[in-house]
Amino acid sequence: MEENQEETKDFNWGKVEWGKRIAGGAYGIVFLCQYGGKKVAIKVICAGEEDIDGVETAELSFLREVSTCSLLDHPNIAKFITAKEDVNPPLKDLKNSGFCGVIVSEYLEGGTLASYVRHHKKLALKEKIKLALEVARGLYYLHSKNIAHRDVKLDNLLLDGQGRVKIIDFGVSRIETEDMSVKVGTKGYIAPEVLVSNSYNHRCDVFSFGICLWELYYLKRFGSSLASSTPQIGKDCPKKLADLMRRCWTDPSTRPEMAEVVKTLEDVLKKAERSPFGCFSFLKR
Figure 1 (cartoon, rainbow, N blue to C red):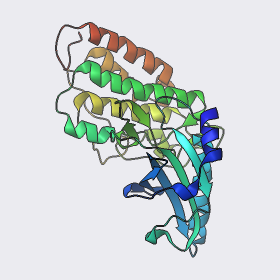
Figure 2 (cartoon, one colour; figure 1 turned 120 degrees about the vertical axis):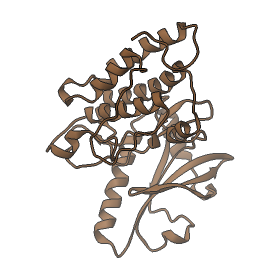
Figure 3 (cartoon, rainbow, N blue to C red; figure 1 turned 30 degrees about the vertical axis):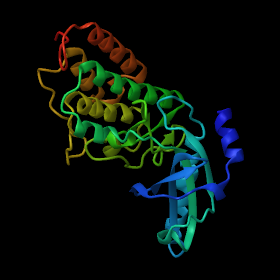
């Protein structure tokens, strides 16, 4: 983390060139900006001064996200650069803020895996597994730090310029020593226990990963409006991959840890790379 600390120390906020909005949600707005001749992504978390509860929520969300991101250093996690409170971005829709915090991270030019899936109709199995494996390694790292992401989905998985997958958006992430009982996540990905339990753990991410794995294999979105439902796995799916998906969707106590998921995907990838055939399901069931 030394490099990140150095960047934070030397960061000159006056040199930021604010650009267009590229993403947004309940926990902030992301802008594509320029700094020192490089593109960076800047997330703005703010609330109007008249919204007392909103100010408190925004500040807490900002502090939690920064405390999480500043701990992370992994090839499959978006790189945190710096953060600051009481910044006044030159953006007309953010004036009169009761609280405004900004988080600077690397800009990932390859877009989301959601977009990737929409634009690829065919892809070799080994390429699908490589993408899934990078997600799995990132989650394995997070869980090794006792951090649950809590909103794993293709929209929060981005590609850099070299095609490497990186996990983004830690707005609802929690360190597992903190209370995890709030119902958060995205329909179609959210684990059942998040909705019905008074307490859950990092294995909610494993459930969500299983949905992402299905989407990467079939190159389409699951898109269920029903919370905690799971997609159908066709007979074309390699048995080892199908079994892994199903295990990700079992009761939390029997779901695999991400270390096991990584090992399973590595085994599947080795077999796929040895296959003399083309794309899709050429592993024996």
